[in-house]
Length: 225
Image (cartoon, rainbow, N blue to C red; front, side, top):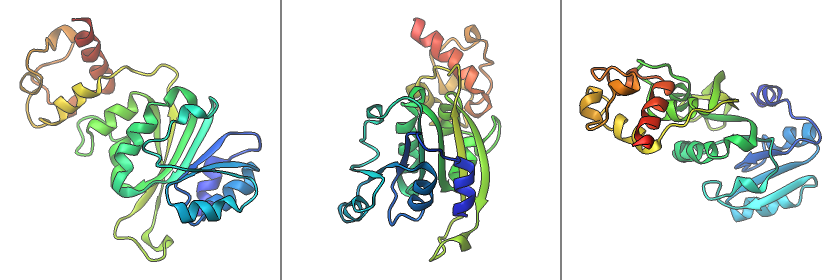
């Protein structure tokens, strides 16, 4: 499993590779072997202290949710086995740095990855799908079986690749929250006061039926008012 992740990332010497939450360093060691040097962000003080003893590592004892990734050079590559309980807020935080990132490779709960890559008009499609697909080309690479971990977790995992789009779509996050808090309603009821037809959107559709491009047009209309 680790070898598959490293092959997917394919780090090279000279690249700015940043690992999120290295923990005991299971992924850190093969990443370091390939990259030659590695930045790691670890919130646990004891784990961070152990990691500092390893040559080639630059350790930041910090919460990734609050970390300013603008401190790294443009073209950085983010990698990690993200904590499942805070994976969604972490992804929204990382998305703010899309213009400075070359790519991201994360292992996450399978259900979250399926939401990330979901197509419109599917059960998994939602706010997270739109927000990320507006900024990144998303690809689910492979599923990781429970047996790959000791002890085995209760959920399956998957690895996803995120590559920033050359031309990202500007989608208002407040708009997405409004829309998907009423995802069962028609848009004219979920987004009252918005001239959806002027944005080229059928008001009888539901929030889950719209593409990221549709939400970008609505966002532009709202911003122009």
